[in-house]
Amino acid sequence: MAPDPWLSMYDSTCHIAQEIAEKIQERNRCQRNGENSTKLNVTIRSLLQNLKVKIDQLKDLLLRAISTRQITQLEGDRRQNLVDDLLTRQRQLQASYKNDGTEPDVIRSSLMTGGVKRGVTNPWLLEETEETSGLGFGEIRQQQQRIIEEQDAGLDALSSVLSRQKQMGQEIGNELEEQNEIIDDLTNLVANTDDKLRSQTRHVKMVDKKSTSCGMLVVIVLLLIAIAVVAVWPAH
Image (cartoon, rainbow, N blue to C red; front, side, top):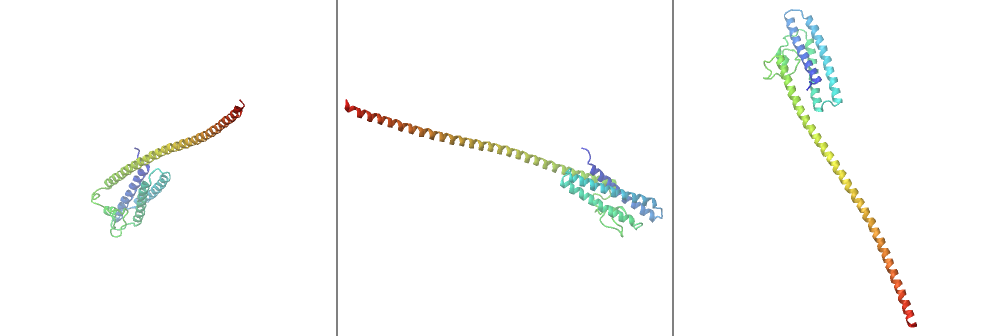
């Protein structure tokens, strides 16, 4: 599966933030040692500007992905939290850069922990755990990447479950529609049968009425014949 462009850009943005923190470390060491840090300041300013551009691009891409439903709402919220964290890092790195020559140096522990040492602004606001203690930036980056991949795998599994449930719901809906069509056909058949029964009942009533009238006529004729016979009989 091809890597997600947004996640790739997020990784590169995190790398820029880490590089800025390292450059600030190096600049502060140079200033304490009385060395020229002009070149480092220029590099840090350029990286900070690049970081801002990258974060703006991440926000635009995330907004587009959410509005076009390329990602789930859950994934959208997770990525928004990542962007918010980057914005916090950007502000703190900017503050650390402006604290030109602040003592002591922005050492690795201040980069990883949530506190500060003697007024040094922490650009990360992340509490270092036993798992990250003793690891280099590259190793921490790999660990973060593994965590993101595990989260992505969990989201993929959840998405698969939701997709199956959606498919089951659609199948149930289709079956209900078929059952409704069968019920409608039966209703129409019953209505047609009822109409036919009513028609046949009216026909039978009409035939019965005609039969009754014909029988009465026959009786009258027979009575008339009988009367005529009786009337003629004495004459003989």
